[in-house]
Length: 110
Image 1: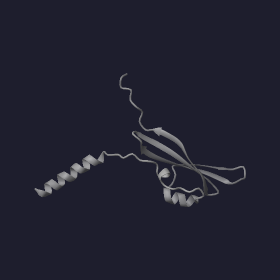
Image 2 (image 1 turned 45 degrees about the horizontal axis):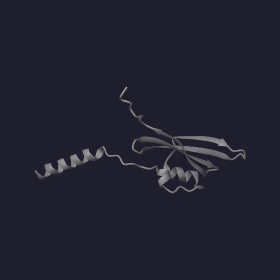
Image 3 (image 1 turned 60 degrees about the vertical axis):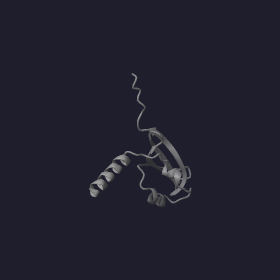
Image 4 (image 1 turned 180 degrees about the vertical axis):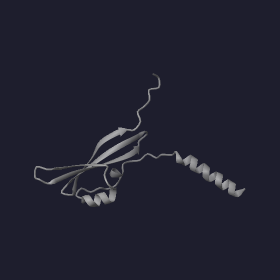
């Protein structure tokens, strides 16, 4: 009988908490990212980007932009794309380049 209560309580807890989503902020704004960090250390810390662009500056320095996506809940779900620009493997810029809703509001009165 006691084992049955433990199993029921555990299952009920799993069911009730599995649908819970907390509001989050971007890991890139919640952590202290210093300009000048080495690109390899950055990738080791945050993982491989989903996309990148490579070009040269007017001074013939290699310029690389790494793109990272995150799903965030701010009352509704968003996909945030953050770009990190490196020149000669040093971080020089961080910017949010795209913020899009994953679901559009329904106009159900049509």
